Image (cartoon, rainbow, N blue to C red; front, side, top):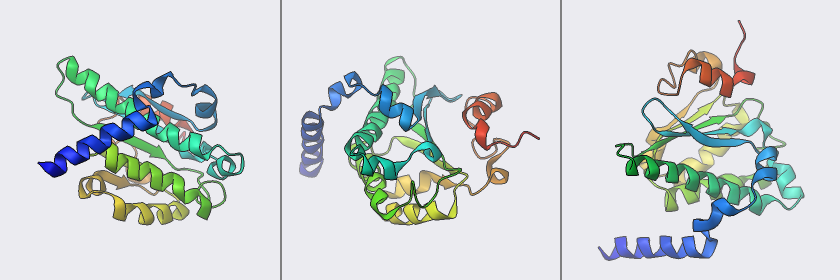
Length: 203
């Protein structure tokens, strides 16, 4: 009981220090244009779905231009927003308790997203997820995963809870997850093709 109380207190202390309750009032328009992420969707079961288009994320540029702290805060904002959607669903009578994360990795490369100095972004995201937003992800999908990003996955897996590791599904190419067998609960085939249209063969 003491451990639970201490953990809860530290979480509240973190929220106050980082001003999480007002994080949605900050100006996110410019940074989201540079680093596309969408978290206003729900799947057929009513679970919130966050979509990260990592090929458009020039993490190295964020380091060089002094935007790393803003980028890591954006990741916290995304997790907080998705969590709030779950709470809102519960308040409306839904029994939904978990959400889904969909990460599109097509085009990710070792220079812009997997450089050695880029690692803190992924470590911070994973640490915040496990420390402040644990147990709320039903599935964490990595699709079109290139070989360089496997390095990142190998680094962050050990700091994940077992429940998160179990939720994580990695797909190397389109054939492994299309047509929607890998992600059966997302809105619809049309919606997924809209989300990941750049990655889907037209034939």
